[in-house]
Length: 142
Image 1: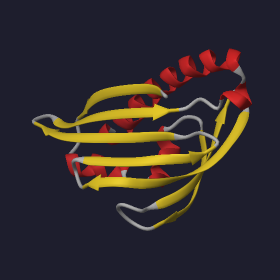
Image 2 (image 1 turned 60 degrees about the horizontal axis):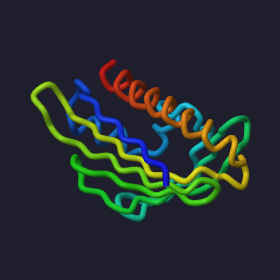
Image 3 (image 1 turned 60 degrees about the vertical axis):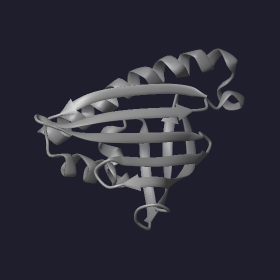
């Protein structure tokens, strides 16, 4: 599995940061290539939703499920379908706001993209992670 780790300080209350990121519908605001979030069902551990994502012009679909949640500390979900991944958001209160650590482990859909595109996808996903964390920070500090 490929891995991406990002860490940032967000100058906003910890509770606001956690609440925002624990709502899958907000992903459409901060995750650049996500094109749809639908059918969100449940709360906390076991919450599920479906999604669509576009990479290199190819649309991927799947679903997600929250596997761990400790309010204002940790939020973890897995994605299944065209792209399998684990997203771990860790939160820590700091004097200036909230420290957010995002850890993503994922598989590149090599059978669909091909081996040549795999390396391009890894680089593109690194850039997208930078943009996503910048978007989260901008939205919550704005």
